[in-house]
Image (cartoon, rainbow, N blue to C red; front, side):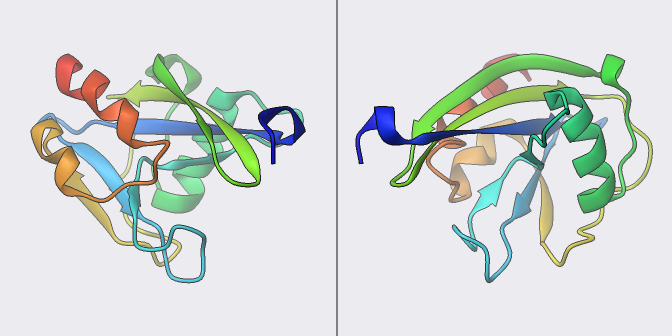
Length: 137
């Protein structure tokens, strides 16, 4: 399938950073595409939503974390072609939030030091985001 024939899917992702400078990764559960790979939390931007609104909704649903738009800072983005679609994924960084992260949808989660991010197998779209986080934190 040529790039011009692929649907563009907008997904927002968040590098949630704790007080020790670690970043939260979530493991894609069995039954989902790319199961077993580690990713930055987030999700598909729904019609009528901004990427920031998506992250506020997804962080609450997936992890029990509450935050506000003003606490989400855009950092970089990924643009990656998969077989049947093209993914456009802005990555935000968030250091201010409430709650204790827990995998509410059966996914494993882990707080990881930026230098250790490459030790976790990730979807192809997430991997190019790692150097930005290593430089920042």
